[in-house]
Length: 364
Image (tube, rainbow, N blue to C red; front, top):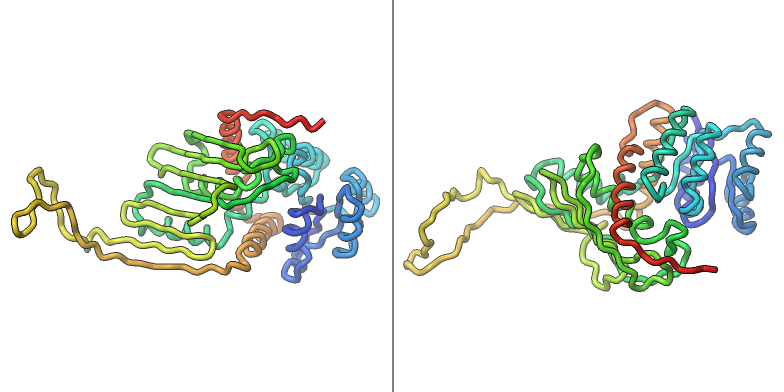
């Protein structure tokens, strides 16, 4: 089995605890080998050297020089640098002929993303964005139920990525490309746009943002409404001030509905062919005794549920994403998550921020 050489930029929460955790797991070692790591902090470089047993570097430039000197070229560079560095770092690597898998948020704007796409095409490189939540077991199940048609035409899809928390790290700063929409938002927004499944159009966007409990200057509350002709309304909330989060998904459908979170989903639907026969009438409805009545009927519901693994869901999504990338690079299989799809997401959060200009914290 062909093994892909990986260079990993960053040893923070994404670089070490997500990408690194997967790449050093036994299940990944047949397909991937980490051959170089960069991080600006010495303590993280020392830890990486001990954990991965590969050369470590303080900068991307030093890493590239070291790799070229060794003659061992990476098949893929994983860019888990700071969010505000994603564009410049990815562009630099693509222009030097390296394939890149970039963490989220990939860019501040569609213009920045288009620059990276153009560089990838010019240099014949693979360029991907790490939207692993498309493969999260709970979302895979939700999409399976939707695609089965049992719920009928979808009317309203409510998505909540909520909780109650206060944050004071760099991801709360606009200058670091932070805030809830770009930090957490790429997960549910990718899923929402995948449900709409109209990547060649721009949805109508309404967005309300607020700063509530953050210590930075970026938003920690987002309400995002997306609409398209002949598509369900998407109501997406990302809130750090929800003390009573109750669901991740709640779907209104023509023949039924769905509710659930990342661990438990319930859905029910009726068969119109088995429902009581009804006809429109302009006459007042009456009970058997002649007194006024309201429209009531008994529908026979088909009810189902699904239980997910709360401990392994994240790992499953990460592994599935890397498997997709491996199959694409080695066997030229098509990608389920494309940069063209992510481009629509970037356009949405660019418009959302245009609607919600916020003052910037002076860090001087």
